[in-house]
Image (cartoon, rainbow, N blue to C red; front, top):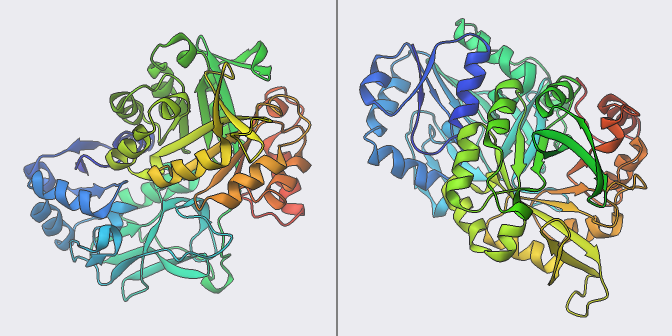
Amino acid sequence: MTAIIDYNAGNLTSVALAFAAIGADAVVTQDPGKIASADRVVFPGVGAAASAMENLRALGLEKPVRDFALSGKPFLGICLGMQILFEESEEDGGVATLGVLPGKVRRLPSVPGFKIPQMGWNAVNGGTEYYFVHGYAADLSSCTAGTTRYAGCEFTSVAKKGGVLACQFHPEKSGRAGLELLREWMAGGPCDFAGDPAAAPETSSRRVIPCLDVKNSRVTKGVKFKNNIDLGDPVEMALGYSDGGADELVFYDITASAERRPIDIGMVRDVAKAVRIPFAVGGGISSLADMERVILAGAEKISVNSLAVRNPSIIADGAKAFGRQCIVLGMDPVASSNPACPSGYEITTRGFREFTGMDAVEWAKRAEGLGAGEIVVNSVDADGTRQGFNIDLTRKIAEAVGIPVVASGGAGKPDHFVQVFGEAKADAAIVAGMIHTGEYSIADIKEAMAAAKVPTRIV
C-alpha cells in the first residue's frame, strides 16, 4: 500500500488522482500506524515550512515520517514535502526541519526579470521539463541527483538518499513526463534524470494558458463579456488542450458572482480527473470554505476577483491557509480618466458591471503585499477583440510587482504572444477564442514563440 501523507497542507486530491491514473493503490492518511506499515510513502506539499512542521507535530506525524524516510523503504517527497526533508529552511525566519537530507533550503534570489515564486515549467539537468511552483530551493549537496536553474541560481531539484526520492517540481501536474516518473518510482526503477546541467536554461518556459469561460456547465465565449455563444463541454475541451500542449488551464464560472451562487464544484472534480496539468478556477468564491472545496476537488489555484475587492483580507487568509502559490488575483481593468486612477486603468467587478474607483497598478501592488502569488490582468477593453493584448496595461502591472503576471484579453494570432512576452514582460498569457474556434492551435502559438526565441515547452 502507498500512503499519501495528509498533514493539512497539500494538493492531496491532485496527487491521489495522479496515482489513480497509473493504476496505483494509494491512500490519503493521517494515521501514524498506516504510514509506518505502508510499502511506500508520498509526502506532498504546498504552503510554508513553519506551518507544515507545526501540522506534523500537532498530528503526531513528525517522528513516523522521519523514521520511514530513514528506513530505506521507498519515500517520495514533492515540493514542500521535499524541502521539509532537509535540515533547515530560511522560510518564516528560519525553521528546523526533519534533517533526513543534508543541507539548507534558501529563498530564490531576487534578480531583475525573474519573478518569485518561480511558477511554470523548467528543465531538470537541462533535459525534461516539469512543473515548478516555489520560492525556496535546496542547496546543492551530496544527495543532489538533479539540478535546475532559475534567476542565475542552480539549485537541487532532485535529491536521492537511501530510499528517498525528493523532487522540487510536481510530478502529479507535469503531464506525461510526471506520470512516467511516478510509474517508474512505483516499479522500483532508478528514476534517473538524463541531460546536461551545464546546458540548462536560467528561466522557466513562458506559459500558454487556455481559458474556458463556463456558463450552465458549457464553455462559452463573447466579446467584452457580451453576446456569448456556446462552444462545448469543458472537460472534453480541457483534455484536448492538455494533450495539445497547454501549460495550465483556467476556468471561470462567469455568472456565479453576478448570480451570487457557488461555483460549479462538479465541473472542477470532473476536470481534475481528466487532466494532469495545473488548473485554476474562479467565480462564485466567497469564503475560505469555498477555497478549500475547490482545492479538495482537485484544482491547484483559486482566482479571486470581486471577492478580493470587497474583502481584501481574503487574499491574506487564503495565502496563510493554502500557500500563496494557490491564490491568484484576477482583475478586470478598463481604461479610465478617473483622477483616482493615475495608471489610466480602473478596476471593475462583477463582470464589468461595477466601477470601483481603484487604480489597477496600486491594487496589484497591494494584493502582492497581502499574499497573492500571481495576478491575471484581463483587459476589459481588449477582451474578445483578437486585436492583441493590452501591452501598456500588462507591462505596467508586470513592472510594478515581483510575482508572476498573466496577460489576458485580446489574443488573436500567435505573434500576439511573442509581443506580450517580449514587450510587456508577461510570465504567462491566456488564450481563448482563437483556439476555441479552431483557427489556431496551441502548437501554432508555441512554434511562433520558439521561432522568436521565447522560452516555451514543446510537447
